[in-house]
Image (cartoon, rainbow, N blue to C red; front, side, top):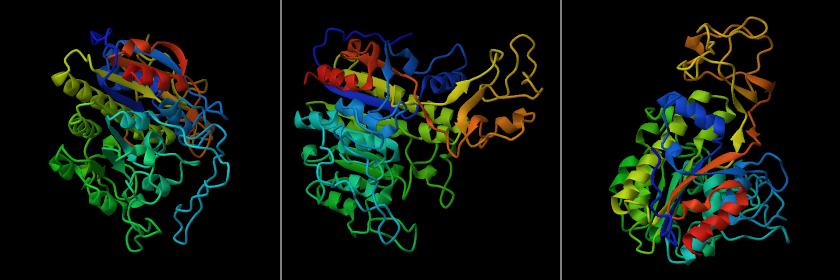
Length: 455
């Protein structure tokens, strides 16, 4: 049953939660639904009653990357691939390496190379609202960065990090007294170079986390520290030392195999962020990214992509449940769920209903394994491109293809699977959700968010 939209007459939304499933195209949503709940089941996001179809192309490409697509949502401006929250004329100029081999040299300062454009997070902050940006990727990755930073190339992550330190060198003054909640991975972008451990870190020697603590932020490195943090102070949680958070499938991993056992789930991060942001009586804007969906798809590892999509959907449910504790009809809360782009994963063959979505395809008439033109079995999920294109196809068996590390076969052989250029879905519920309908360009979402907020 869909969530009732009893807030249709509400003139403005006090709170907006913007959920972004990175790379979560329509096939990924469908496959995840079947994987968890079966063909007749529903994800939480499926139950949101307002829907739209989003065009995602960037200023210079039919198929966008995450930087300009998320920035289009956040700013209403089309920009080039790799550019984050800048004007359309900005040229994507890669950062350079320092003496330690890390990309800390910012090459974006060329005269006339674009200008910053205001994000919805910055606008909300200027109106007195609390703001937050949380992700399962590095905090300085393209999607979260598009909410709070401006730079000509997404790979200049050390300079993106400096933009969130209130009063520090390189600070983004449009953030006022600072983003109230920040969570993700990639602690190395905030801390000095470490020659003895991971050989990453800031060549300038700055400890941005110490600087933020001096400005009143509570700094957390794991799930326990996040849970213990007061809800009355600004907060930054970086739960991975030098990379993204673990895939959901690998969350049991402990050091040295991984940091997953000590990392909060996206649902836990979301509800904690809401606890902190809701202290502001003016309301809040929160961006929540399920970022590792994209990474698994790039690797053509459908199982990890689907499990991370389910974790993302669980975060949506947690947010809805929490919001309704104080706003039962969502009269004051708008929740948006969308993706920044598609991928090349395809739903393949005439499989029997109930056949495991990750398994080999089984014919709906006979229940027997389906065969290609050469008499070999194949999986229901495949990719248009990627690394796993065998020179000669052979039979696939269920034990192999249902394994955690199985990589689906691809049509075109590339070292890494690419994004897809197809439209993505947007789903919405709550205050002013009726604004979101039809087929619209991703840049139009920014204007609809402004209207929903009453800005």
